Image 1 (cartoon, helix red, strand yellow):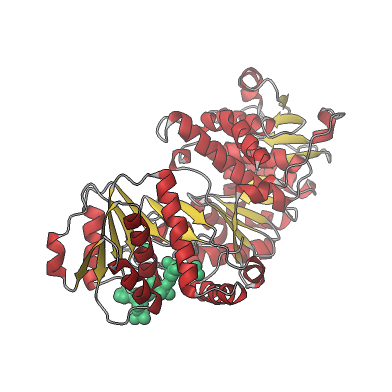
Image 2 (image 1 turned 90 degrees about the vertical axis):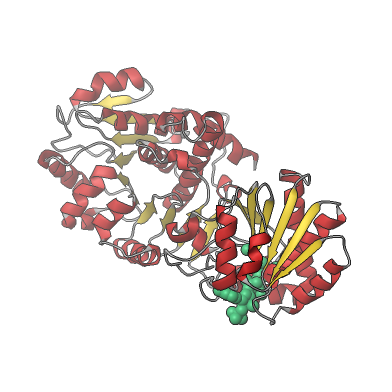
Length: 504
Ligand SMILES: NC(=O)C1=CN([C@@H]2O[C@H](COP(=O)(O)OP(=O)(O)OC[C@H]3O[C@@H](n4cnc5c(N)ncnc54)[C@H](OP(=O)(O)O)[C@@H]3O)[C@@H](O)[C@H]2O)[C@@H](O)CC1
Ligand SMILES: [K+]
């Protein structure tokens, strides 16, 4: 699904109401009903609700949610921020309707009036600003945002976007933004959700389908899209009854050096849980016993070096290679990598120290086969493509890099970004902060190599692999918490990830 700018969302909104022959107020009613239903189903109605409304249509959504809560006999208070008299028409219409209900309404003109408002113990619904934010929140809006953020609220639910967060621009560090537990966003997540500059404020993102015109949306120009489990589930190939290990490809994980054999084990095991027919681990001799004992499913090729990989590898055209986890950067390994890249012609997966060796020996960039998949984290990417100033600068450099080198890059972060050789970027919302531990990346390399080996294209591999890895993380966090999980927990949950993708 395409990620759209605020301007495009406005166009889509206008087109959809015209096409469906409904008014903009009807669309607002639909959007707000979706929010109400989500709250009812997931949090229940037995709470004290405080709804804070700004002057635009985001505030209008808040007013309709207040009506619905009030009609359902909830304890609800609506706070109107009157910093302008230019309220939107649908806001005015819904305020008149709300005034006919039992809902308590308080109109706030100045900062002193905020002192009497308490958010402690309440569910706060943030409907101050949505995608119409045109400048940083200041004055009354900034003060109330600060007050909500520092209160002991039960939960904060942001409608469409946390107020103060831009839709498709970067916020400055000092900007006041609502820190939401949940963001109920309409139609599609917004670009800013994927960047660390504001993305920490969104909490858990719930995308609500408000039936905007999908065919019109698909024709809008956007370089960015959002990957969902339901989209990538379709990339999985059906396994045939009469099939054997040779049917499903051969992943060859080139990894490890003295003290870093664990990386090779994690990658090889992850590959073996990805549906691939066969796994070979190409490791230095030092890792042979460890690998054979901890990953008996993997065959070992220990012909290249004792403590680290060295020498000239013989390329097998039938193998799909993933190279890098734990290989180190010793001069012998750099030579090994140089030779490998010169010889290999099929797309490969390149991770970790292999990327660091390449950034220090940039001529190797020219030898990377087309459509290969590079999986740097932000620091590794900056070593390859240069230091970046912020997320938007990084995104632009990412597009340039992928186009220039005709490769896919999976830029690993809390919100992983995939960029294709055509410069198209896909974003995933799957994953959890519990995955921010050593070895998670090695697991991703294994999954990607295993999927690529099964004949999926690089495009399918990156999208499916990133979502699957994120789902495995979510299942691990559910079982062990975000604190009590590690990269090995991900391995155990890859199967649950597959089960979910197969159900959709
Ligand atoms: N298509 C969809 O997806 C649907 C969208 N819907 C909803 O509409 C929302 C977008 O509504 P919107 O366009 O009215 O803008 P919104 O965010 O309410 O704010 C605009 C107001 O705030 C003001 N303002 C801005 N910044 C300010 C600041 N820093 N400090 C003070 N004031 C500031 C601005 O003033 P101005 O910039 O004109 O001076 C204007 O008065 C969207 O997020 C979603 O919730 C649903 O109802 C239905 C389907
Ligand atoms: K909001």
